[in-house]
Length: 224
Image (cartoon, rainbow, N blue to C red; front, side, top):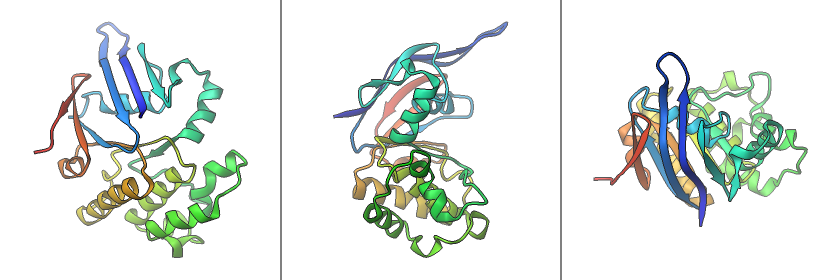
């Protein structure tokens, strides 16, 4: 069953010489897939992620998440849909410094005034090895620990898909390897659909599928 689909997705930035950031990209991601999109700086991969997350509008084309055309949603409706259906993980964690780890993780649920499934919450923090960090604040954690918190936050709403933008780009090699292994574990344990944007070939090769973005076009390649 497909969770995420794009149809002829294009993004052109106007100007004296228009810049084509995405060029007729069509992609299907099945439920539970763990895929990587790689490419050089300026290839269009971050623009692609912004389209998938509904934070930017395409010039033409459509994005479907669980058969909902998110490109047709009003901004206010998109904000609610994103909070409930899309988990986003950033390179720089984007944790709120004056909230505890626990409240950072639960923030999407609190904003939606939704009841927290405590059993699922405990399973997440145990899987990620942060159950003893709940009362700490982000600045009291290492970079790897902060990224674990960000992963937990992305999982807590049971989203249809998690989008990760260079999730290991701010980590050293040791933490990169740990977080890469955790993504695989999360994918397997929770059957979570993951789309990673990365420039790290080792991270990409840990995924089920690797796609390469070149000049706004997306090409599939097989892991060696």
